[in-house]
Length: 278
Image (cartoon, rainbow, N blue to C red; front, side, top):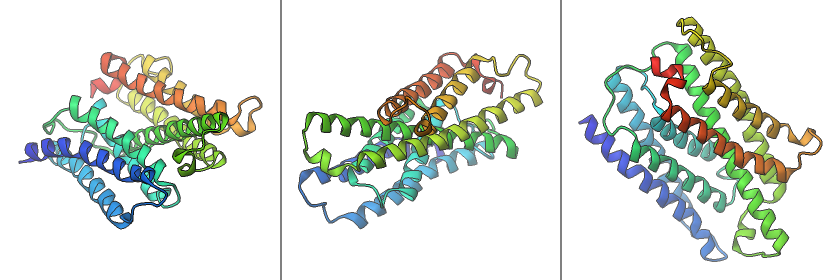
């Protein structure tokens, strides 16, 4: 029964996120927003609850906290991205931003559904509190990095429209440049502290398990630290001479690509991470 439920949700979740992206993108159809605000919010909540059910089923099958491989991690990041956005900024943001966030969640969840396991893993995931906090911290930080990259992308998109003086529907539906730049930096700040904490806790865990040669010189750790400090520069870019809002936005988009590359490296070269030893 649990396997059928996971399979059904793996198919349904990308479709639901895509549908939400289309619903919020309907604001482009005219000058007035479609009068379905409550229905959309109810659908967002229902989708998040269904998404959470995936991890509840996986945790029940493994007898505890579910073990996250790269693809399940992408699914968890999609869940947290939408949750953070919905809880913190959905009511204050234009529907256009929401549409972009849901489309990004659709891409992440579609990747997880296509390449991730469609049946619950029977081996146990992390069991102690420190390990669980490490996993949750990295997932939350990764979600913040995704949001920072998306806000940076929207900043560049709006700036390009202003430079070309093409003031269409997208221009009217996006927040102003100052707000987009602020959200890019705030998301980057959350990602910076989250990744810094998560990486150092991970190194401490590896040492406690007696993993030889694992530390700051490990290739996977170096890639994650590069992402961490990259977003640290973005977070404090307002106080750093020479890093304009435009450059910080380009850096946020590039940092998001760097994070995805690090995750892909951990998939192609699983021996590069001590997680393969769990």
